[in-house]
Amino acid sequence: MDTHNARTELGAPARSELLANWRVLAFATVGAGLGFSALGYTLGPLIVPLQNEFGWGRGQITLASLWSSLGMAVALPFVGPLLDRYGVKRVAAVSLPLFAMTVFALSRFGGGLALFLVLYGITGVLGVGTSAVTYAKAVVERFDRRRGLALGIMATGLGLAGLGLPPLMAAVIASGGWRNAYLTLALLALVPLILLAFTKFDSPSKGAGVSTLVDPDPAPSVRQSLATREFWTLAVSFFLLGWALLSMVPHFIPMLIDTGVDPVRAALLASFVGVGTVVGRPILGWLIDRYYATHVAIPMFVAAALGCVLLLVGGASFAPLTALLIGIGFGAEIDLMSYLSSKYIHPLNFGALYSYIYSAFMIGSAIGPVVAGYLFDSTDSYRTALVIAAAFLCSGSLTLASLPRYDRAAPRTAPRETEALPLERSV
Image 1 (tube, one colour):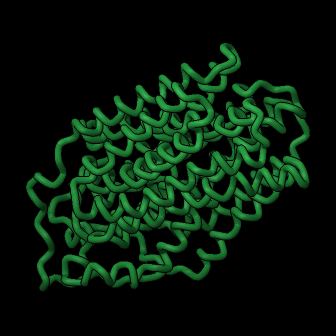
Image 2: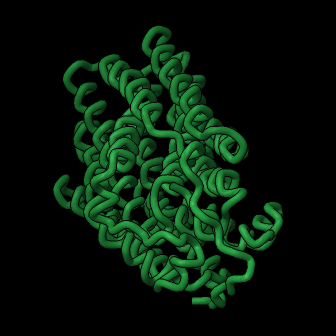
Image 3: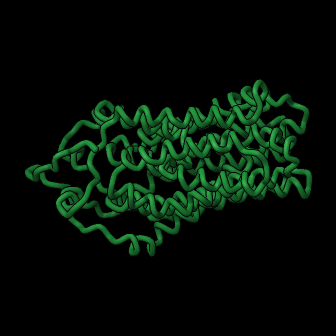
């Protein structure tokens, strides 16, 4: 269960968290939007140009998402412990330029599906430090009473990316071709590195002294935590939700183009995913600081399932509404995954264990678009993919609802005011 940050327990006003840690929050917000997750938003505008130039099927092109996510899923269990041991700043300082370099390599790509997929896989491995795991850890370390709101603000970076990147990439492709789209993304990926240089972080929490201050009970081992019901419930739930919410995102633009919509206009309509995310995330964050988080988020997932049904029944005319509802659900998902993980995972193990949960989410969110693409290639329709997405949204919500309530567990003993706080140091 959750433990409170020692500084907050010692009486620091909750509102001061935002004022004291705004630089960290700004870095996490920008980084979340322009890091690895940006690849998912930019693949949609690239599907048709890549299909036209290389003759690949849509299922083959969306395999890029699977390869990059699998690359990240393989690397996350190694990077999670590094975040716990060395801290966010050191991990991000290495990963951000490596990620930008691999995206730049995609702009120089010369042909061959196998090489294309390998390059995407490398972006997942080398860009692992630019994932939401890194930015969520930065926020969880510095926020307690406003943790939900802070995670919501951080996740608006993803929403703004979903809102702005598809039309930006479509415009760049229309004026200069698909290679310039990757070049633009590589340059944008370096922006968080500039913010990182001006942001201070606490030293990684290590040693028995810090553990005693935060929680008098020793932290369970990672192996012990991996065997708990809570861990597997979170992993399964977010695998299903990731599959459902991300399966149609890269297909919105080609689906609209198939109905005769201009590619740039199709990208603008698909950007409603970003609108829903930007609107939904800070509201959700504010609510989960005040109410039981799962009960707040599940209605958003059900609304996203309804959007899939509307698209199934009403056709492409419902695409903007579906995109909006899926964006709201996607906003709830990332926030909820970070927030609930911080409630059920001991803070000293957060990086290691959250990396596994996020890996499950990444694998689900990668498989979903690939399955949708191959279903389209074989049936010339997205109907089956929409049915699967709606079903997984409902089943993932039911799985989350089975979690034991963290707000009814016996509270951990808070540190006494007479205990000394560890000195903070910058890394």
